[in-house]
Image 1: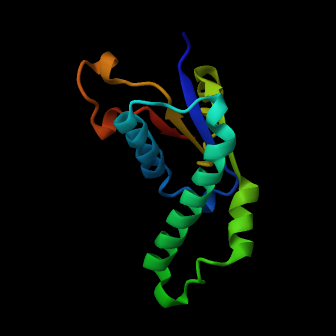
Image 2: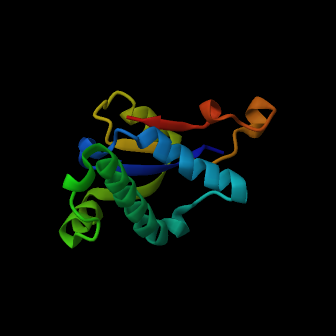
Image 3: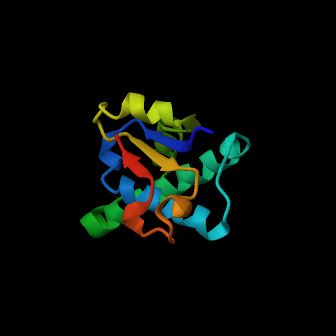
Length: 132
């Protein structure tokens, strides 16, 4: 059976500087719950992934700019994320096709447990999370 990946695309690489950590967080949640997302989950999780990325971006902005950073309740800014985040489940082939893309707009998060492959509980560096 081919491995599946959660593909999260943000069509603006200004917001992907912490993409690996974002992917690791999602993968950790899946491991902890012993459940991985599939196609049936996409409509619901897109909303939450968008809000999570929006919130993470604003936390990062607040750390960087402090009181000069805009209020996080800015609906126009949230709409920007809603319009620019795409979420899907893809086969490993999609990852291989985009590996050379190199614009850091896509996060691939493995929707499978790597523990059987490495014969132990995975460390974060073993997580199947890729930024392309």
